Structures are given as C-alpha cells and as structure tokens.
Amino acid sequence: KAGVTQTPRYLIKTRGQQVTLSCSPISGHRSVSWYQQTPGQGLQFLFEYFSETQRNKGNFPGRFSGRQFSNSRSEMNVSTLELGDSALYLCASSLGYMNTGELFFGEGSRLTVL
Amino acid sequence: AQSVAQPEDQVNVAEGNPLTVKCTYSVSGNPYLFWYVQYPNRGLQFLLKYITGDNLVKGSYGFEAEFNKSQTSFHLKKPSALVSDSALYFCAVRDGVSGGFKTIFGAGTRLFVKA
Image (cartoon, rainbow over all chains, first blue to last red; front, side, top):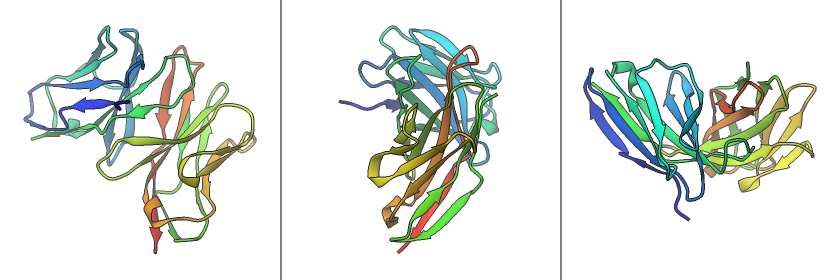
C-alpha cells in the first residue's frame, strides 16, 4: 500500500511569491492534516480536511489556505511568501475524521524562501 | 485548550540502558494520546497510542508508554536502548471536545543513544 505522497519535496521561492504544495493520502484515507515544522516553533497545526471540508484550522494568517478534492487529495497554498515561511510542511492522512486513529505522515515539502 | 509539554529538549542514554522520554498533557475531555518518532529528513512515524483501557501501552520497536491520569502524563519508555533509537520523539494529543478534532504535538525530545 502506497504511503502519503507529498510533492514537491524541495522548493525555493523568493519573498512575495506564492507556492502550492500537494498531498496524496493513503488509499482509503479521507482525512488530511497539514503541519508546519520549524526548528524554533516545532510542529504547528495548519488545518485538517475531511470530505472536502475544512474541519479545523490553526492560528495562521489568511495567506495560508488549503483545499481537499473529491479523491481526498489535498493542496495547500501560501501567498505573498515571507522569509519566516521557510519550513518543512508535513501532510498526514488518517482513515476518518471522528476516529482516534493515528496519523500517517508524508516525508514533507521543504520550502526555502529567499 | 489542549496542550502537550515535553520538558526535556534532549535525553542522553547509553546503549543497553533503559530510556524514558517524558510527556504531560492538558485536555478538556478524554485524552487520546500518541507518540511519534522522526528520523532525519523524514516525516513522523507512529509508535503507539492510548485511547482507553490498560494504562501500559505497547508499540513498535519495543517501545511502551505509561498513561497516568492523576499526573496527566504519558511517558515513553524502552527497557534497553539501541543506538538506532536515536531520533526526535513527539508526544501528541488529539482532543475531540472543542467543536472539532485536531492533533497537537509537543515540542519534541531529541534522544541520543551512545554506543
């Protein structure tokens, strides 16, 4: 069974640009969560999607957005990039939204903003 | 609001010795608790979870964790550490009471096992 796939794995952008990251969950998983990981702030929750609906959102500015498609694939977008957006962005999937199952993580997309 | 605390940035242990990585939590409802491990340049991998029942939970790679409700703790343990256990460990709590679900992670504890 294929794991969670995130693309691209690495990318470099400049301030003011925008970026879109993609996440394909494990087959059959319908919930997708996004996290930002930085050395200083640790793992910060961005948002969680289930059945194409955002179910919960972390404390990030509106420049951070996401969506989920009918096949459960998800994308997140960051507009007007800032230096502080440099981070590893992790996507995780789980079977459902209301369950207490564990998260399955992808290997992340490492974003560098210059 | 839910929160997770990992009081140690780093834990050092000799190979073959027992290890403990500490975690305390705060939630408004029943705690759903998890441990994950992260190796360099990789995503997180699930180790074990506590949902209900037995306070001692066994997981992958010989790890176990003890749930203590009165102390609101969920410490990760292993009887005999291996050099290959060296990694970054995260405790997490999933709260299902605040109108939605989200999994919150602690700051992480770096485990260093010396040969």
